[in-house]
Structures are given as C-alpha cells and as structure tokens.
Image 1 (cartoon, chains in turn orange, brown):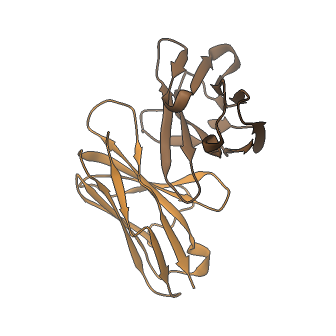
Image 2: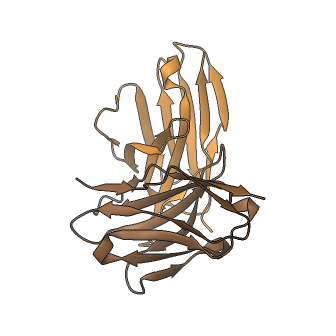
Length: 116
Length: 113
C-alpha cells in the first residue's frame, strides 16, 4: 500500500524560532498534499492544500505567512511554522493523493510540535 | 453548509459485543465517504470507503459500513469488538472535486474487558 512518512515525529522548539516538518510519499507520486492540524481530543482541521509546483491554497483563518507550505516535488511537501508560539503547539498531519483516481488520501503518522 | 456529524463523542462496549458508530453528512449530492481509525499519537488508517455501487461496504479488521441515502448516513459496524479496537474513529466525506476531506468530530471507542 501507499506509504506517507513525516519527519520529525516529535519536535520541541523555543518560542520565536521556526520549525520545518517534512511529508514524503515513499512509493507513489503525490500530485496533491494536504496539511491538517489536530488539537488534543479534537478532529482534524484542514490547513491547506498543496499541488506540486503551485502555491498552496490555504483554508480560511490560516495565516499563510506563518505556515509556509512548499511542494517542490511529487514526493515531498514541507510545512514551516515561522516564529512559533506556544499556541502553535499541536499535532500536524499530512496526507497525500496520487495521480490515479483512487479517491483516497494516504495519511502520514503525524508530527507533535511543542513550543516552549 | 457541508458538514459531517458524529453524534457520539464516546462509546463504551464490552469485548465481544457488537458496535455501531454513527455518521451523518449534509450535502446536496452523494459524497465519497470514508471511515478512519486513529490510535493515540498516531496518524489515520483507512478502514473503508464508499464511492458508489453496493451500499454495504466491507473494510479491514472486520468492519463494515452501510450507506443510506435516505438518511444521509454512513454508519460503521462490527459484529464483535476486540480490545484492540479501542481508538478514535473518524468519519470523513469528500463533497466536491477539490479532494478536500471534511471530518466529523470523532467518536472515542472504549472496550470493557
């Protein structure tokens, strides 16, 4: 089956610093990748959709200058949380969709970000 | 507005008992429907999906779901729950050609020994 990885799985950073999270599709080409945020004991909220070679499309209320998304290749998308603050602490999950019409998104294992 | 509703926040069942998790959607047409399971601190695993055709869908780990257009529902069922099924379950729908998934709020399943 299709595998999506995320790195790092956990990261702790100081307030004011930036942190980058990678999302990789390991065995398929992902034309579209999605970034979600999940607060404790809550559902997933879509942050943005990224298509390879295009600018990401952000959901309403998501600051694009704070959450920088790059989808430079068909197997890699990155989310950079800039000038992180404690309220950015969350579980970030990516998903990827391939070129075939399987109507399925494959999810990464998530990244736990803690901002101190 | 397009939405997915999971009315049960928590459900507790005894091991070996049957299970049904409810999911309803609000949309003018039939969306693509999914059930995912999430263990603590983990990503999401797809249990099953419905696109069209047979309204009873079989998934992994002994789960099944039935799509009922008249009720705008896609309830997840399992005839006999195992302790390892304890997790968070999310229903999701893709309601347009944007490929975006709208998630329900999730149902936490607890399994009594």
